[in-house]
Length: 273
Image (tube, rainbow, N blue to C red; front, side, top):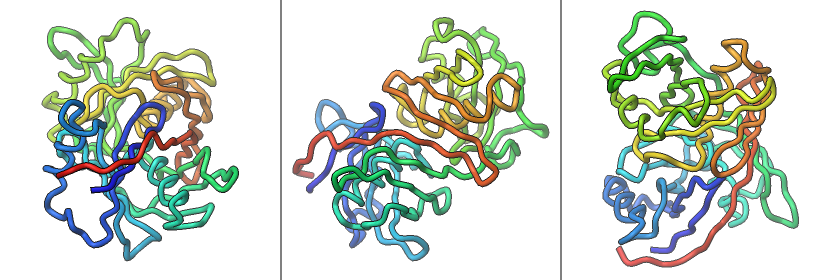
């Protein structure tokens, strides 16, 4: 199998072309093997490039543990760069089919290669049925107790379920996210973002990702954190998000949440499977 290893702010993925659907129904097995950092290539997930009947191209995301993700912000930037740089879709604006619907990617081209990429991530939903969450009301500043520690959470669907917790990052250990991920309120689990407000235009975020664990960056989590902070009146509609792996720029608009950031090819290779 030929593959390309890519990263967006340290969130790393293995990109595999699967236009003929060779790996249909084998995605879980494939992701676990490829993402293993000792016996495989190593990554937070795999991105399968497939044909689409509703957009220019289709992106299928599978987490390192073999579970599916309907959307991934850093992943879709890597995907957009891959298909442009490889000449699969040679447009500066690309419609990409995802598990969360069709997303638009806007590419900044430099010397024939995609550099910074802006994705319209769509709109969030605070409806508990959409997240999904076992709650009749929106989960905004809801107090919960997990492992004998109290948290104030705000949860939403931003392509995938996200829960945001505000405070100084030093007060949270990233592994706390693993307990919150499986909290009874969330029947299908949740991603967990610890968010520190720096100013009206900047936040710092570290994320525990459902199905992947701690990652250096989370695009959907950055969007969710900005949305939650803005909803609570803590920041403006446009903010810089500092992540362990780099910087993302998020803007809330009437047409959706815009996420801008880099994507890079790390290496290409061949692996026996």
